Length: 233
Ligand SMILES: Nc1ncnc2c1ncn2[C@@H]1O[C@H](COP(=O)(O)OP(=O)(O)OP(=O)(O)O)[C@@H](O)[C@H]1O
Ligand SMILES: Nc1nc2c(c(=O)[nH]1)N=C(CO)CN2
Image 1 (cartoon, rainbow, N blue to C red):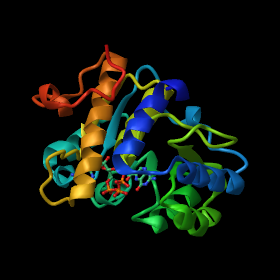
Image 2 (cartoon, rainbow, N blue to C red):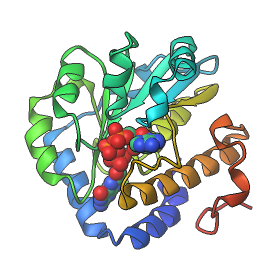
Image 3 (cartoon, rainbow, N blue to C red):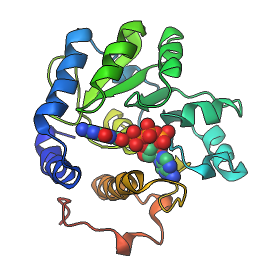
Image 4 (cartoon, rainbow, N blue to C red):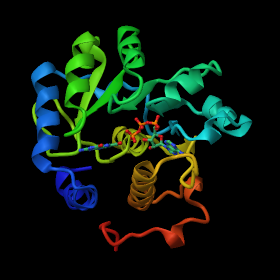
């Protein structure tokens, strides 16, 4: 995903949530100032033959079906707390994607063990960046932004941790994406999180159109997805 393609969608998200672009750029610049280099995403074992399980943190992640599909995948890219849920079932994540708002100890531990973590900087996690990133093994931190990329900080597209995981796997050239632990209609989430999940759903729809793939997680939902903000013909 080139930033030019992402930018109009980012603008729509930013307007919807009232995020300040300058704030997101501060998040990006804080990451850039702490990290001169980035983990090279092409080192992830993802390629044209690879099925990637993109794990979200919805309650369905602990169902037998979801765990089985995560085990069957070649590679697991997990969003935020999905890493611990999978680990509690002896499933290791090959990469974590996070904006550091829930489980910083996991971020530090994974990077220390050589598991890459895509750390997202935005206008509302400046303190977390300052307190967590210096304690990570920088060789395994992949800094990301939703604003324009700069220095070591990349933008692969995506907004919530889970859909950014999907855009990252897409960028590296995954053959197939399967989604586990995705519950768009989860009644246990608060209204702001529900709105974020609405955007996540739109973004996954955009991604499947771009990839010319059909994500089963969207089956039965496509007709109701609001697509006006998406550059879909
Ligand atoms: N029902 C759900 N509840 C939470 N996350 C979900 C759900 N369904 C899908 N997801 C995906 O799982 C990701 C990880 O969720 P989690 O609640 O652990 O992290 P988070 O740090 O609050 O996420 P974010 O900061 O992106 O909102 C979400 O970003 C979202 O993309
Ligand atoms: N400025 C800003 N950007 C974000 C935020 C957020 O709370 N503020 N949350 C995200 C995923 O939860 C992704 N991006």
